[in-house]
Length: 195
Image 1 (cartoon, one colour):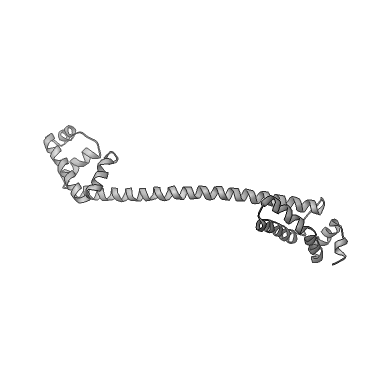
Image 2: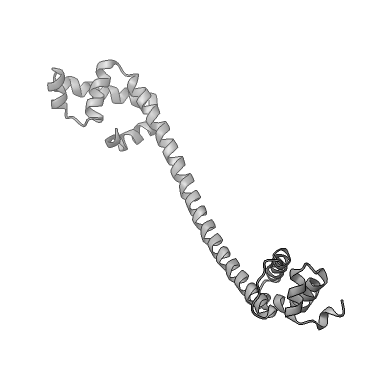
């Protein structure tokens, strides 16, 4: 191996392409430390710098037959480290932005999903109780609350008095209040424009 340390980068590269492990070991020993220092200065993280340089050497060995290095070997390695650091930075920035947006989405999504589920459950409960009203009372109630018709219009359409319509609505609200409980009833009244 002592003869390898006197070889030029070009000679080492040619031997490397032929799969010479000693040539690879010489390249590794010749450049690892300076590449690590170069990576560490940029990353300010010893472990990441070590990973970048190790990954680069793994790549060099695995692609040794395809590598077309037209510059000095050292220039190629420095550029490769710089590019890997840049890519790592982009990935890291993207990852941070992605994780932040994902967290925000999940936070909002869970909240909205929970609200929607409760709203659907509440709507289903209210609909169930409305459907349980006596038929005529249900019809009057739905014409008033769901269709938004006035007492006068309902009375005219059903051929009954406004007093009867008012009484039917009052009785249906009393029944719903007793069946649904005061909180659900108040929520219903607050959201009655939706029904």
